Length: 310
Image 1: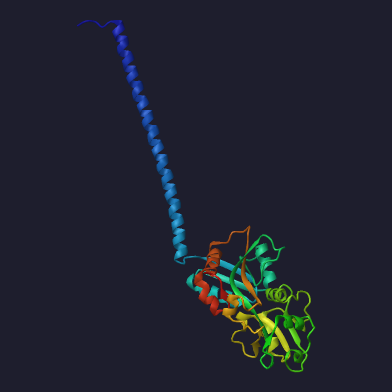
Image 2 (image 1 turned 120 degrees about the vertical axis):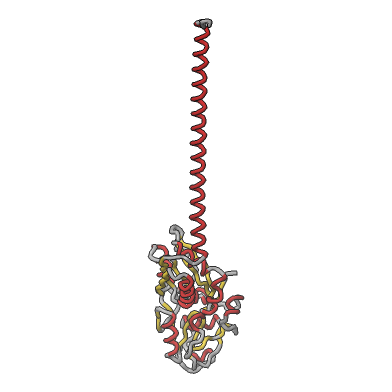
């Protein structure tokens, strides 16, 4: 056998080294590819998990599996509407508790602004200075002009109502009634009912009241108890009440149809007030969405107000 030359041996050694080097490079490339594939798979798993969480949340909301508490504060005139809607919502969502403090529209707006309630209730528009808030109209309400059931007067014009409340007309005989001094009953400052009444009759800061009361129910009771009284109250609270009657205004009765078509002019919005800088909790958002949907329309009508959702 021939001996290999030094040159041949060197060539063989170099070839072996190159083979080892190529094998190592191949191994490194394979490892990098495997790692990248693993990272992509992990990212896909994360995305899928997030999608599953969202789907689960949506499914829970759709099935009524919502829990938590919702606090509402404000208009006494909206008590019937909020009462019937919250009762139905809690029936459909037994793990949700809704509370409502009937404190007046002004207090409800302030509570929404300072965060002491989730949803404020105002039976009036927001004022220019009430910033950082959004008012969403859930229904319309007529402000009924009410007198004692024994009062012979059945109709007044807006102008006559304004003159009665500002003291220009002081006796019922001057508008077709008995010879009795008129006793004007009204709401306290900050009331949405008062704000709506005074805005429409142009009597803001001009009313001369015999009694200034803090709730719709109190006004109704005061008019029931006095034959010479006149007052104003939410249409939703007046329906079915004994001892009082609602006057027509300019010949137009306060009804759901006349409120809806605008022919009954003494009316105002029922608003849900929310804080622009505070996100509603899932339970509060679900209740808000329910109240502003067509699903709530029949119950709003039952409460004596006129729904606006189409």
